[in-house]
Image (cartoon, rainbow, N blue to C red; front, top):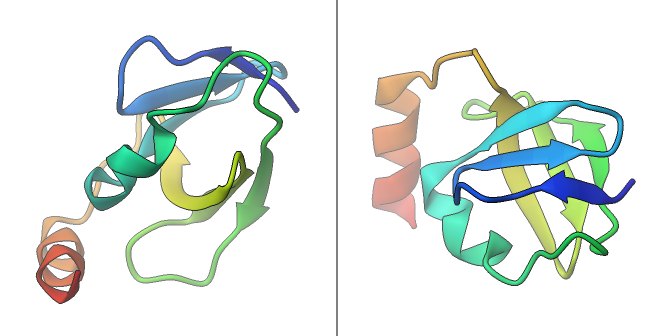
Length: 81
C-alpha cells in the first residue's frame, strides 16, 4: 500500500486511509519515504508498538493515530537504542 501523506514526521497516512504514529526512536528511518513508497502494516507482539510499517528499506514501529504511547516502555526502548 502506498503512502498517501507523510507531511508530519511522526504521522504516516496510507492509501487505505489508515493513519499511524511513528515510534520516536524510528523517525529517522522514515525520512526517505515518499508517496510512491510501498508499505505493509503488520501486527507486532512488542512492548512498545502494536504494529510495524514494513517497506521502504525499514521496519518502523507504529501505533494507530489517536492511541497514546506508553511512556515507561518508550523510555526503556530509547535507552536501549
